[in-house]
Image 1 (cartoon, rainbow, N blue to C red):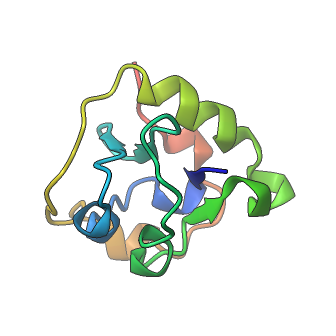
Image 2 (image 1 turned 90 degrees about the vertical axis):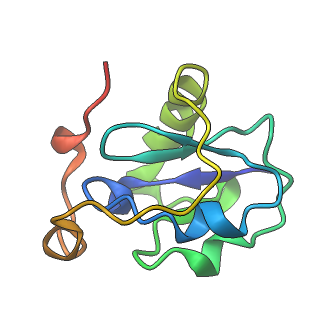
Length: 108
């Protein structure tokens, strides 16, 4: 089992989860984080640390968010590691309550 970052992270990118990850499993894009399944040790420390409830065990990802399992795996291959907490994106508070924001995901 691994953990997956889902849609709630888009345009928020809080990094509280990064700070508690003992395996340095997070990868950073412009407006989203992902978890590298090959690095994740399934400790679950990131789940309660996420202020937007964007992180799930892969077996618990809601049906409408299942596409994020493959997306995390794909993007983790190319995105750089992030190991230190940073400020969330400037409009994080505004985006935190937005449910459908997949079209806002920025990735090359």
